[in-house]
Image (tube, rainbow, N blue to C red; front, side, top):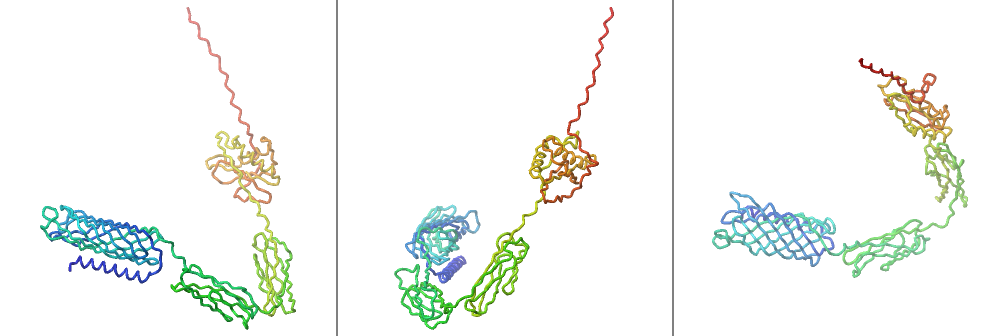
Length: 534
């Protein structure tokens, strides 16, 4: 047996093993599609010779197939394979090999994997270089595995086929009987994408529900149970198996009755198992309670003092717990929806530090010596003071006049008028003017002069605002800028920027009036030229 034949048989053995494993592991009902369209890569080795010279394998190829499924298992497949190689070789023959075959396909559909086998027959065309192509009837058969991705898409992990077709090539490159037959006994491996069309919807899982009536009874009263199966095939015969953690169950197909005679108070569970003759099964459970003889539970009322506090202040909660049966009672289990609660006996203290504004509910439990309880609660309304106001920069003005480096130009009017309006609307607010100058500018008091000149504009009445001078403070900073920052400081706010106050006794405001233009020098009258002598 040749090395190539051994390789082909090994590939088919691997495919058969994967088919067996997948069939065993994944056998589960799945809806079958009506159409399957495959497209992908195909590799083949013809494993044949022409006049004792072997053919090259086909590293380049494509495969396509369409299958019509008659049912879940059986389909009819039309398969095309195209294989190509190129180049020259001193020991192997380059060629092309095309097949178009039809035949049955048997699929074992699982939940995630669908192994299949197929046997096809049809057209086979082998075309060695420098020879006329030979068309013959051939067949191929093999197996593969598809992995489901979605309802309509699957991945063909591998498909391994054995290919057979007898060809004959004569002298001069034409088919004939002058040379031995070239019989393809090769292997084809494919993988790609499969589109799944049509078919039914996935089978819905079976389930069951259980209803009890009533769900609370006194010992001796009966509980009626009713099972409701869902998604079981209507033709299948159903079997109901009943059980309960207490009492005596009297089954009657879909219904059952639970006799609670002699049962102790507490919770109990009824369970029903529904099965059919096709191994579908579902289970449902429901609870019922056997109540104690009537007992009067205690009652409790609670109050808070004070009922409204500011965040951080404490409040005292007092609860009054009473038993109508005269039993001994205790108050415990203090909880609060906010803050921290510390309680002892019927009194607790609520710590509201860090608590946001809104109601806080304080709860406690009143218990008697029989285990009967009653809840109680009181509400404390927490108020949070508004946040302290902060200073904000309203605007800033630039000083770009090369002639007068500290002059407040008309370009600053919009900024300063807006700041003045803000101060006039809030009589208790103040303004801080932070002067700045470039490191290259002189004199060193230029920043202070700019701040003082800006204050003069706001207080002089030139803008018809005339803000009170005591509400405006000029300061300087070390920023390397040629501007003044205008800050508004609301009532209660603090200006905390790193600045230095201006000594207004040394730095006086300068006029905004432009300097007078220099007087023009009077021109001397031109002398008349002397008259020429006669």
